[in-house]
Structures are given as C-alpha cells and as structure tokens.
Image (cartoon, rainbow over all chains, first blue to last red; front, side, top):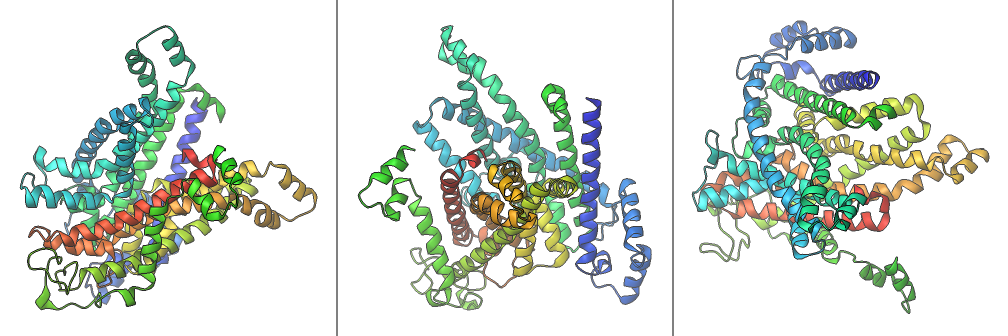
Length: 306
Length: 295
C-alpha cells in the first residue's frame, strides 16, 4: 500500500513538473516572453527592465528553476489590471466557481441518476428513447449557447431570471443548468450502463429468485452497487466542471475563475492567464491522485496489481 | 451478425443497400454533406459579401417577421451584414478548422501511440507521462492559454486544437498496439526479419486505423465546439471573419434588445453539425470497432 501511494505521488510530482515545463516552454518558444510580461504599451526601457527582473537573458535551465521556486513559494506574479498578487485574486474567485460547480453537479445528479435508472429498467421503452435524445443533445450543444438561449427566453422575453451577476439563488439557476446539462447527460449514460451491468449479475438474479419484489431488487440490490462508478465519475467531473466553466461564466458574468481567465485575456493580463492555467492543471493532477489513492484503499486488487 | 447474413443473401447486395440495412445514419450524413457543399461553394450560394454590411440595414429581422424583407432572408447583424451569408461562410471556417485540427491530432496521436505501444520501455514511459500531463490540463483552458500566447488566427487555432487533442488518440491506439504486438502475424514479421519501422508501418498501422477513424469522427464535434468557444471568447478566429462562435459573441450585443436571430441561428448551425458528426461517429464506432463500444 505504501509503495503504491509513493509511486502515485511520484507520478503526480512528475506530472506537475511537466505541466509547469510545458507552460514555461510554450511562452518562450512562441515569442518574446517580455512582451507578454510587460504591460501593454510599455516602452523599450521597460522591456529591458522586465528582461533583467525576470532574468530572461539567462540560460533556460536557470530561468526554469527560478520559475519553479517562485511557484513553490506561491508567487504567481502580480496582476497588471488589479495590481494584486494573482494567487490572492484566484483564491478570492474560487468559492464562486465552486458554488456554481456544486449547483451544476447537484442538478446533473438529480437529473442523471433517476433518468439513467429508468432507462436501464425499461430498456428501449419510451423513457429510454427520450433519455437518449436528452443525452445526445447534452453532449452536442455548446454549453454557452444553451446559456445564451436561456437568457434570451427567461430574462429578455419572460423577465423571470436575472441575466448576469451573482448573489441570489435566482442568479444560480441558469448558469447551473447551462453547465450541468452536459454532465447530466454523462451521468445518465454512466448510470444506465452501470445499472444494466449490475442487473445482469448473480446477486441480483438471486434476489429475484428469493422472490423479492422488483422494486426492492432495484432499489436495494442493484442501485446501491451501480452508484459507485457514477459517484466516482461525478467526483472527477466536479474538478472538470470548475475548469470548463470559462465560457458559461463569461456568458452570465459569473465572478468565478473562468471569468477571471476571460478578463485576463481581454485585458492582456498575462500573469493571470498563466496562473489560472497552471492552477487548473494542478487541481486536476491533485484530484486524480486523491481518487487513485481512495480507489486503492477501497479495492485491494489495484494496490497489489502494480 | 443477423444483419450481415441478411445483407449477404440479398440478390445483388449493392453497397448502398448494405448501408441501409445496417442502420446507416442517412439524415446526419446528408446534413454533413450539405454543410460541406455550402462550405465549398460559399461564394456561389451566399447572396452577399459576409464581411461587408450596410450600416443603414442594421438589426433587420428574418423575412417572416415584421420589418424583415426578402432582401435579407435571415436578417442582418449589428453592422448590417447579411446573416445568411455569414452562416454559409461560417460553415467553411468550421469545416476547415474541424477537419484539419482532427487530422493533425489524429496523425500525431496515432504515430505517437504506435511508437509508444510498440517500442515500450523508456520511450513508452516518457510518452505516456507526457500524455497523462496533457490529459490533466483541462482542454479548453489549455487551448485558451495557447491562443493567448500565440495570438488569434485561423491557422493558430487549428494547430492549437491539434496539439490539445492528440492525447485522446495516443491513449487508445497505444492500448490496441499493446495487444496487437503479441499476435502471431507480428511475431512472424519479426522472425522474417522485418525492421521495427516496417512492422509498425505495414503490420500495426493498418490494424489501428479503424479506431483512429472512429475517434476522429467523435472528435469533430468536440473540436468544433472548442473552436466556437475560443472564437466566442475572442481568442479564436479573429473578426471580421464569419465564424459561428464569433457570430454568437456579436449576437450577445443585440440579445437584450430581443434580436434573437443573431443568437439562435449560429447556435443551431453548430448544433446541427455537431449532432450529425456525433451520430455518424456512434454508428461508425459500433460498425467498425466493437471494442470501442464502451468508449
């Protein structure tokens, strides 16, 4: 067990290093990083000063190690626009993003799990077909367009819901749905296939043979076991949600990290863009590590395998 | 299986009949071909220049609404440009970006997947660590970052999306190569003295190409949505080029005033194209590669 955790930990550290290296190299290969790091409209002297300050004239290896050491210290640079440390800015926006992601996740599970079960219990029934269309649309519609159409309908025509901003529960409904539909579709598909698998298993057959009513078989024996892969997927999706929310947050002017990234691009605030991407990647790496370890704790086969 | 035997017993099993029997998605394919034709013949079909408008004709609604006219069938945007013409030329942008980016990602991912799976050892380790890291980066965020660094242009978007999405291919292809290389025909090729390069090219590649095609079809939708998202955020195709994502960003300006056609129509185009590509991809997946059904 300990060996497994150590190995996974090492992989994650390597991933984090590769992640920072990728970002570091891209900025330097594709042009003059001083141009990105200096504020728009800066003079030649400013450029020179930035080059000196960040040591951009030194060898790449030296630059990379100082880049890493400042990252480890939590120094992601200063935002040009807000004039505050980027990390502070990021952390102040994170709760909003988490709130939106949580709301979208709850919505997607509330829709995805029951409809997935229904679809699995009555395969090829009308509910299964409706569910398939719902899932197909969820996977094919761009989330930001769903958001735009909802604004058009519920804010402009009906005037029921606020079109942008945050603060009340009413502000949360539309962005949560726009973001959650895709994931509801994913969770529904997962629930359906997981349920189908469990329903064909020996212990469900046994429960039926015992003469348990079908409803009890589904609720007590099938559903509980089918839920595990769905919840795992949902856990991983929560992080993905925080990160794909960029466009939805932009549409609804929701003050989360996605919106921060958008502002970073719009105001040419490079430190903000770089930090948001780095932290997003790091978040995914860390969550993957936690999931892997939890899996190993639950399932001995995994930790003995490798 | 039953489907195949039935097709075989048909008097003269033409290819078309075979397609019909096996549930070939006719409508989605027709939509894709239609969009493709629009993209190719945009100059001939589009009634107006998509990038030049008449400011006097701003925000004209589609012809069936009060105030609309036959001159602009689907209305005009905030600069008085014809929406129908922009949608037609937008098909070209989506087609070019979607297909090329998927091709770049596919070729890169397949080659790296084959090399990684067949050579194994440290090459495999290094490539898979890289793949894992790139998979860990949220694709859209990563693409936005790259676009912000290199600046927006159609070519840059294609390269960026190719760079972001090759990992999906690499993962699946590598897995298949791992089992392929234990098969008899590969072992015989080794005994016959074929070089590693020859084996990978002549014996492994033809066996994984089906999977690559399936992933590619399923990726088209993802890539088109990504391109639209990037353009919407202002780091994709630069204006005044008519891209559907860009049209949505412009449409947002007139949304509060109720100019619905600027928001609804480009989105419908994206939806039609992505939905069709997904349906075709699903069919191909089941048809070509039963192993990928779980994907």
